[in-house]
Image 1 (cartoon, rainbow, N blue to C red):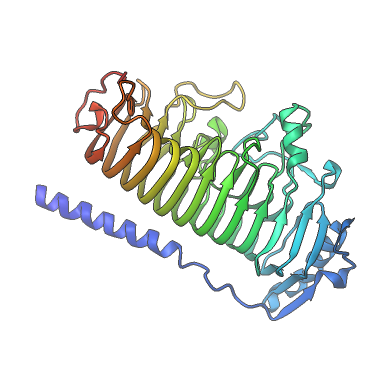
Image 2: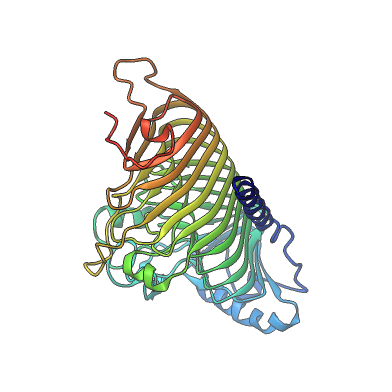
Length: 443
């Protein structure tokens, strides 16, 4: 029986690994479109001053007529194209030529106000409604946002100042957002200064994000790079992301709203990425994870100058789960806390959450990781009601900033259980071997 069990587990692992590997083969070569028009044909002016929202809206409306004829491409030539928010359509490629810059308007009236997402129940910054993102896709299929390294600039300083001064009327917009869409490709572009998130895919399937650069100021408040949210079959690869808060953050809804919507983020592969998260984490899971997050494979990441490297965040009332996560081939440099797992992180959307909805965090594997100039190896804090279980660490070597000093406090653990092998510095006792006791915090 033990032999059969081992073989079964190996087979499950192989199937899981094979499926995750296919995710990044979704859309390397987007279909060519038989029809193409330039934004110039709709009266757009690329002087950085003329508002071109109507031109973009009219162009997309015109290109809808080609949806059953193989689709179409909207070409944006070199220039600085100021616009407010606009929607895309199915079977469309938005192509930005080199030296083409889509500039977001800094006038809030040019950003529509829409209802909150049903899995959140409110905006991310404030209760109530939210500003529509700059470039939007709703219930679309086969849509591509790409170019020859063109740029989409959210000019987010205006929004950051309003956030910091508590003068927002509605939650901040994102730069690009797809909702309930399938077969989405975002590639070969530079994104700058997102007001909040840079690329947000929510309730989406088959998403391929490839060769993008996303930058905001290190001081930008709670800006996040790429956010797969209640989405499945997602690939993020060959990208460089530098954010004020998190670089990549996986989410799936907030408390009772996410539990009710019940859509997980699953089958995600992240590989060959360079990440910096000034005040957050290079890769984070949660804390809004009430629909569940599972079957995530991270292979190959360079994480630098980040407050934390890999973070698992949740709290009582979230429900949901974070499970079947496999992270390997990671190089960290100048990172505050290499591994963070916090069971008491985040706020609630309102008072309607269930305080007895405890999240599950289990089957987390971290291996093949090296770090230089790391301040804290790990802070892993579950909760008494729902300890973190089956956390497995192996082949990890971290060079600590305070190694060998009397104040060396590399690991701190509470209500966590798992195992470790070949880990330097030596982890807390809760991770030395499997067991049923959860111990005390390591001081």
